[in-house]
Length: 403
Image 1 (cartoon, helix red, strand yellow):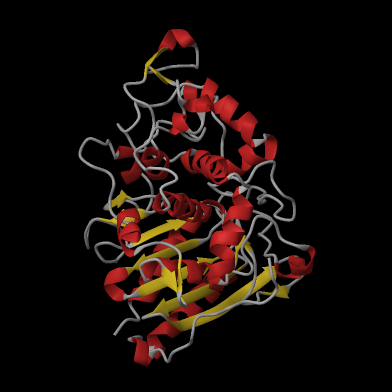
Image 2 (cartoon, rainbow, N blue to C red):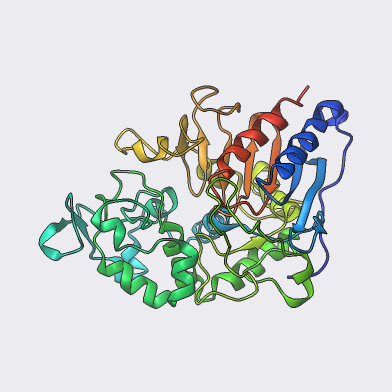
């Protein structure tokens, strides 16, 4: 990570189609949340028509030391790593080095002969059946590969890795693939959506094709060219004073809460949840997608590839029940690394058809609304269930300010 940040050009809110007065509601609402101790602090960055309309910080970087939140605070972005990894794979797709509909086993043979668990499967071979087809690269990106996180109540969930960061903290990439390959799939590939370790597998697939570590590929091909100087896989010593902390206790359960120490590298660069970034860095990534793959004269992806990434990839053959059960995702389909809004209604948040977004379990969130030429990043370390409310709150606060 380099020390300097590169912001988008600034514009007057009114010239960009915002009410300056109504934007002030963001500060009032977040100050109220901080006073209620639902989060220690936050940074919000909003761009419209390619210009920065709003960029403010709130509350505390470190609640224990009472350090104010700087705008360039660094956050563990958890699953907001996933869209980044999807872009990395699509860059290789554009170069003809992998195809989206190819079987994963072509590149990672450990996952080429997986079987599928039957109802009640506890991982034993006697309770598995042959997969009708191999999982594909597309399946990894849209969470239809049949893999999962170990967060459900079935016997199979209980023997699965619980998260991306847990996996990368405990195993090397080779060990992760070996252990995952020994487990049964939860579903036939392509038959059902379930949030999963698919993007972690994708990150290792990118490494195999690119013949370099994921963090190095991203630094050279994405973060560096886009001017994302504070984005990477570890907080360097010179930036430790900007690394945001969490509240000591979950605001809803009162249980102790922590996030993984971002000052240490994982055993492998997990594509599903290990990166760190700032609000302005991630806004540059979001703006690149909004621009159709280009920012400041640097083209990362082709326009049609971004359209493909942010289209809904869940056809009628895919059971999307698990997607609809997630807070804020009713009314959404799923693209390659991002949720995609299917229409203006149904969901509990206002938005536009074609809006796409994703969030992190640490409390971070971003969305892009092409119909409104809008990109928004919300950074906070608030990993409890209250983060779902914060996402709804930010949608309401930003969109009500549009003229």
